[in-house]
Length: 69
Image (tube, rainbow, N blue to C red; front, side, top):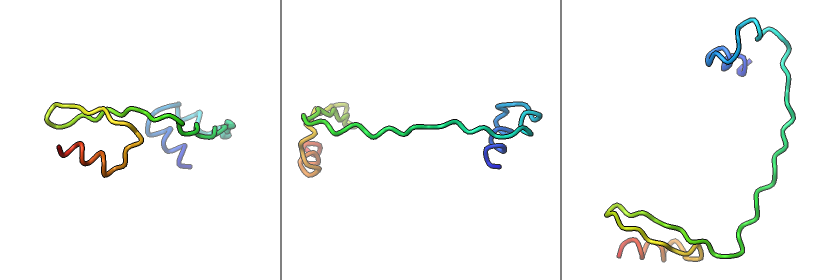
């Protein structure tokens, strides 16, 4: 029912097409990619226009310390 309402609301198909039987398409959900074994560089843009490039290995506390300097 909800899908039919969205279709009508967004005008995806004509109203006459909504009376036909619904068709479901199979979907496969893939497993997420494993986390990188190597550290990743993260660039943080600061409000003063400067940017920091930090390692993903840093803790939240270490990152906060860099940002407040």
